[in-house]
Image (cartoon, rainbow, N blue to C red; front, side, top):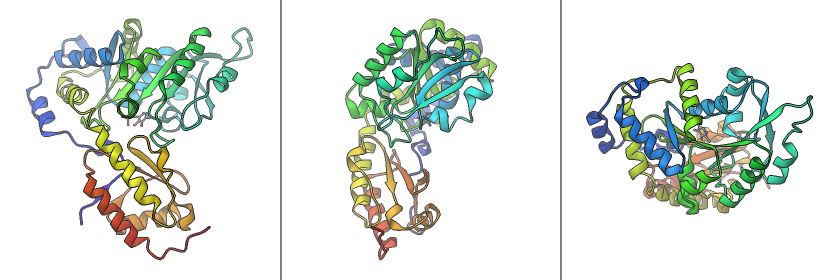
Length: 350
Ligand SMILES: *Cc1c(COP(=O)(O)O)cnc(C)c1O
């Protein structure tokens, strides 16, 4: 039985073409600024976001942490959504590395409301309060189920930030999923943030790496932080080459992943005991609520194993399914048929 693995789009392996480009990549010592392939990737990413410059980093987490450390000083504060990746899944990096405080604000479908953020911004004239230095947004929002930030919402936040001399960072690990789903270009999104982190290694299928974009001055300082964190890489062209290919050739196909996620949502939602908000599935992530099945997450995972399907625990009663390049339309059909089988006869809790 073929294992159908929905745990993450990070499972995607490099294509044949990517492997060829890795082999042929022209390289140099990137810490000396002499790797032409890394430079090309950085220039292309900057251009796509409409930013002045960019920095190739080892991972999305490193890109976000370098960004926060570059924007903020010790004792300053960042406003971000309560379920943000930076808050939940980056090892308390801002506290551990930068003495930076996080101020969470609950959003709707992963999107912060400008009124809530306005209330959360500290009074800069009150010496008791931390200084609000940065607002972070996540596009698409992972924990909210791959939700897209509408560009108008981002613009409102950006205008507020400008008014209060606050910077905006976008955790765009899946920015290109947002681009494909919304029709808003990366450049339009880029216009309303000061920095952005984009992952090459998720749905775009590159083996490694992220790019951080921003102003020339910001990237110069970010380069120092990357080095300090041990992220200065030498002949990194071998991993930048597939990353560049990912930006040029792997964006449009994300549409297939979105289509498959939507279809899977419809199928799963039709199985008694499972609930999926099909309308909330905008990109390649779907959150399946298993509460009514009466099964614990562990018991549900056992059913999945029996069916040769893998997905992730995302908190009590929630299982996350992510579609990606190695999940075909047939795999979605097959998943439905296998899961209907192993979940048959459940007593559904009303
Ligand atoms: C995956 C992810 C990251 C981190 O990327 P890594 O390359 O795994 O470190 C950051 N933010 C979001 C929203 C993500 O989904």
